[in-house]
Length: 105
Image 1 (cartoon, helix red, strand yellow):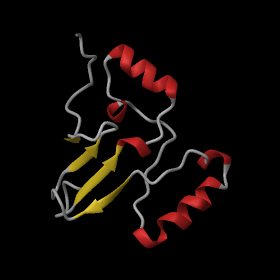
Image 2 (cartoon, one colour):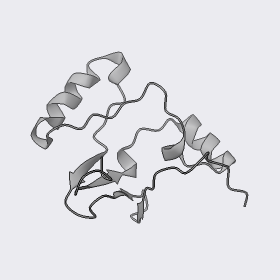
Image 3 (cartoon, helix red, strand yellow):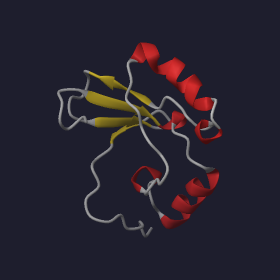
């Protein structure tokens, strides 16, 4: 979406629901959870003034118990997705190129 518009997307890492098991496995393998397949997960882009009501509705279903508002559309940084990290830093989230390989440190 960001690439095809004159808008940017701001994501908040703290708000993205990632299971502890996934975090642990990604840390062990040197993978970024944002680039790992997420079967059964969807993202809905909705009007800001409707977001809370939609979130509350999703949370009424057991399958939506982890639903969260994880970011917003912004005029800042057009055509880019920027992640605000858990420690306060910011980084551009690039489109994946090829297959993700583990980092070997």
